[in-house]
Structure formats: C-alpha cells, structure tokens
Image (tube, rainbow, N blue to C red; front, side, top):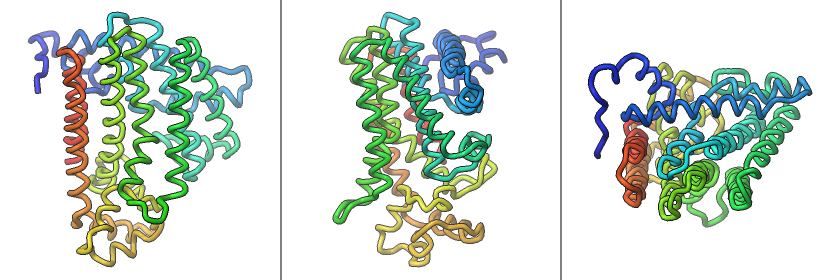
Length: 347
C-alpha cells in the first residue's frame, strides 16, 4: 500500500497529532488532515444548529446524542469522498451533516428496540426520558435530515429516501429472522449490509456527487462504502468477543447478553465440531456474568472466530479492490488505510 509520508519536523508536532486523534481516521497527509478536520468542525456546528428547537424537551432530547460524540465516521467518509471532486464547500458539509443525523436517528430507535440504558457512555434517551420521547426524537432527526437533503437536489432526495428504505428493511429482516431454508450467515450479512453498509455507501456517494466527482468515481465510492460498512460491523462482532473489557471500554459480550447471534456465533453453530455446551448457551440471551464469560471462552476456542476473521479479510480485500477505480492521491491512501484498519483492530 502506498501511503503519503508526512514531512519532517513541525508536521509531526502535537497539534497535528491532536488533529489526527480528532479526525479518527488514519490520515497521514497533513494538508488533507487539516482540510478534513476544518470541515468536520463546521459539520459539528451545523449538527447543533439543525437540532435546535423552541420546545425545551425536543431540544434537550435531540441534542443529547449529538453532544455524546461518537466516531462520526459517516460525515468523515463524506468529507473524504469529496476530495475526489473539484468542488469543496457548503453542499458537501450539508450532506455530511445529513448522513450523521440519519445515523443518530437510527440509534434512538435502536435503543428503544434493544431496551438499552447506555449509548456512547451516556444514559440513553429512552432511559433518561422514555420510549415515546426516544422514538419521536428519532423521527425529529429524520425529518431534519430530509430537510437538509432537500436543499441538495432531487437526486439526493431520492437517494436518501432509498437509503431510508434499506435501513428499515434491514431492521425488519433482523427482527423477523431468517426464514425456513434461509442460510443464517447469508441472512445476517444481508441484514448488516442494509443496516450499516447502505448509509455509509450513501455517505460516499454524496461526497462524490456534491464535489462534482466523475460518475465512475462516485460509484466506486458508493461500492467501497457499502463493503466497508458491512466490514465494520463484522469487525465489531469480532471485537465484542475477542477483546477484554478494559480495551472495549464497556462490558464484554454485549451481543451475548442481548441474545443477538453475530457472525462468529453463526459460524460456530454451523460447525459440527462445536462444543454442544456453546450451542446451549447461544440458544437465547445470557443474563449471568459467569455464563457470559463461559460463552466467550468457548467462542474464542471455536472455529467461528477465525472464520469471521477470514470473512473480514475478504471484505477488506474487496473494499481495496474498489479503490482501483479512483485516482492515486492522499485521499485514496486514507481510504486504503481504513480498509487495513478494519482488520488490524480485531487482533
């Protein structure tokens, strides 16, 4: 992989390292890093302005998750994708804010369905207020995202509407589960592709479109985003099992506690050589800490974890392959680093 080398001396000073930490992407080129960081700061201001309301309850609930922070990967990828076009400006930042609002809206709704009590280290809205407030706040953010996208043109409005459909369909698939005769692994990969990959694909597509990138490059960014979004979820599945709590910053085995069968679990269950005890433990949510630890130990020794890592590596390879259609640049180098990072973070 070709990675731009930062110039010596001041380029490696504390201020640049702080920018790199703020952006949260493995960007080595200082000029690109400063450009993305500056735009991201403006996106943050826009997010806070958009969710303002004269109704205190609406304002407080809507601002709750915005202020909780998070990786902001979707707006970051929008800004990074815009580097492949000649126009950098307000439309790109509006698109970046819109995709993050959509993401935040889905989190409000997810917390209700999952009966979550914490989100991004803060009390979830449904726990702090109630489910009704959380659902309505999610709807409020969806509405404002749609308003922002409406200013970007009819094509953008159609794309975000199609993305809404993908997000809802993915959630419905997950809720209903695989049908008789369906392959559970293929079903799961379809679900996470719709729930996670679709919005990141739209982020890449919007960044390319709003910057005036060539259509070939826009579509490459869309495909890259779709694959990367799915891969990030697989990466999270692996980390939830393989990483100790001190590294996660939260309790291990979240999926086990919620009764969610992720990719490593599905692979383990499909292996005839899997310990029958693990199959028993994965039959439903696990509420006791000791049983969670037992299940984690069995999963780490099963074939499921390694098979999930192989699948993740395949997705990362496919993602890098999509970048071949893009011109060589620091932005493409950064995208390649994202694909490599997905795999590296699971070890």
